[in-house]
Image 1 (tube, rainbow, N blue to C red):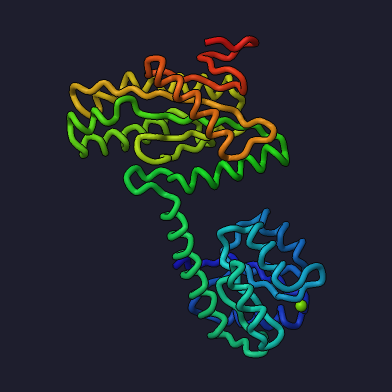
Image 2: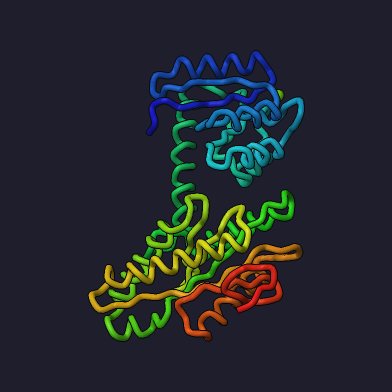
Length: 312
Ligand SMILES: [Mg+2]
């Protein structure tokens, strides 16, 4: 375990805060650097400025109380370990706090140094296990990139951001051409290698801020963050061309690997399904007009380049 833990204590009662800080200083098993604030708003600001490993939060604060403390801190610091302090021995609220993302709760009356230290250590371990499990649930086992669940979560996040802050984004769905033939001709090991090489190549061809995921089978998605249709189509064209040039030979001597892609930009009124449908329609036309190409759906027309009058 990390032997220097950055901890934020959120406690409005100075006497309680001093007791907790005393216990933390006195313990020899873990090294903790402690910051102390007395309100939830200060705590949220502090988590934005500093990355804390652990947040110990009193359930009764002047500007917020009860469960809302946990849910709002969890939102502000999605990966931090949260430990709740309760003024009495009533477990009801505390158990609810755990259901809302806290790892542990401690009654102030029964707070002792060793108990506090042990609670911190165990909570950190539990939170790490949880984060690992969450990350595995979002990862495609074969390629190591995000899976369909990761894709849908990111799309929801992007659509929300578009609706609230007008940040555009695009989606390209790529599909390997004649993938069934690759499996039939060379076997499933080569098929699996093809999926791994393609995911790695796509990952290398897009920007670090864009997200590459495997939707299932031989279908991949790239979410182009803060990008409009013409730019997403350009990057998709380039990725497709590079993959066509380089990837086949990396997989098997005689292999010519090509992919097709369908691109769409988020528009007012879109949800996950409508945006995927437009990208899928463009992909369908790309497949049926010869493959090895990317086409964009501009909301009305499907075309290979974006100009004022979009034409195929
Ligand atoms: Mg209080």
